[in-house]
Image (tube, rainbow, N blue to C red; front, side, top):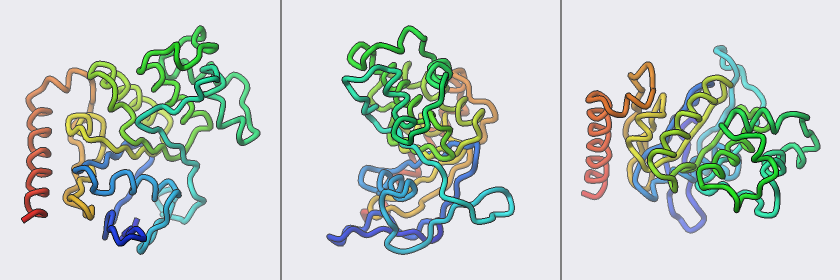
Length: 248
C-alpha cells in the first residue's frame, strides 16, 4: 500500500497516508485504539472497500513483479459457521461455492487444526467456542489462500485457548508460506504472534510505529520471560503516548 487513505461518504476519515507491505510466510498485526481504522484497513486489503486515494498493489517474489490479486480468505471474531451444516460441510463451503471440491481435503484440515475425524458430522452447536474457531480457521485454509485476513479471531476465547490457537496460526502460516494480516486489541497477543506490528494512531489512523519482532522462537515459555514483558510494556507506552499526543 502506497500512501493509502480512506474517507467515507459522510466525511469520516478512517485512515490516511499509510505505506505498508506484507511478506509471505509472515504474520503482521495491526494494533491501535478502537476506531483507528484497523478493520477498515483489513477490508480494503481484502478487496471489500476501495481506497479513496493511494495505491494498493500485489507483487510476487523479490523482483516485485506485478502479479495477480492474491487468493484471500477472512476469519472473523465470530466463526460464522452455518448452524444447520456439519463441520465437514462448513469446512468444504469454499470448494462448493467455487465448484472445486477437493477429495480428502476436510480430513487434512481437521488434522491441521487439531480436530478429530469424529468431529466431521457434528453441528456447530455441539462444539465448544475454541473448536468452532478451529473449524472457521480450517474453512479459511480450504483452498490454500495466499493471504489470510483475521479480524480479532480469538478475542472471545479464554487466555489458554487463545494462546493455543495463536501457536496453531503461527505454525500454519509459516509452514504454508502464506501472508497473514491480523487485527487484535491485545498487545501481548500482538507481541507474541507477530513478525511485524503496525501501530496506528487514533482516528484517523496514521502509522505511529512499526515494531519488528526480535524473538527468534515463539513458544508458550516466551510469555513468562522478562524480555517479553518489557516489549509488551514498551508498546503499551507507545500506544498511550500516541493517544495522548493526538488528543492534545
